[in-house]
Image (tube, rainbow, N blue to C red; front, top):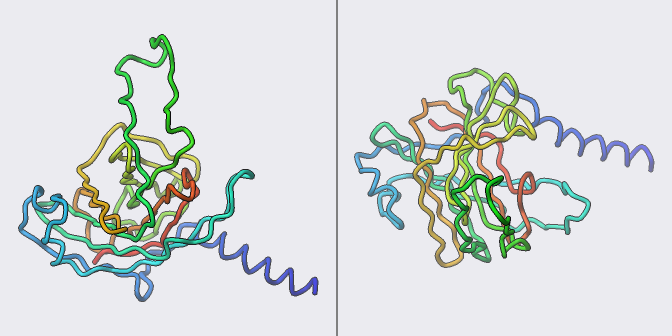
Length: 242
């Protein structure tokens, strides 16, 4: 019995450790995303419900659930098993549309952040939605496309940093960078993005500079109703854009 338990624990540990290391960029079968070319303008592509996305074949990507990170976390069974990804190239840009089924739209309207520096404010007022968590999504790509080695899935690594196009249902789009676990930081930059929630589905479109064929791309989704935040999320393995 002890031998059997040790085998199962070792196998589980291997599943967690292996994706953390940088890996040679050899696309696995079924992990290639076809990219459609379009002459459409940015406004057309980023228009909510634009029919231009019918030109791009959807790629269904499987999502994994991260293990519990905090002692106070409630158990969270997988609710979002897959997401559909469509990719377009147009006007020297690459557009990624990530769509998934969600039982609830977890968003809120928060007060704007004051323009004055934090240390100059007379009173710091916490958000009234402090007990709420919000839906979010992200597209992660290498900060240095063209490397023969994929970055670690855990936010890259020192030799292979990543760029993260992050969207939040409350704060909108923000560009982030990372060089490994717990190194994620905001760049202070944003990027064009649009989101729609309709009939129980999110559709979020990200705009980024064009990427060469063969660039790896990974995806993440945070489900607000499951109190997702930080590293508590759904995530995919690396996929490759053709």
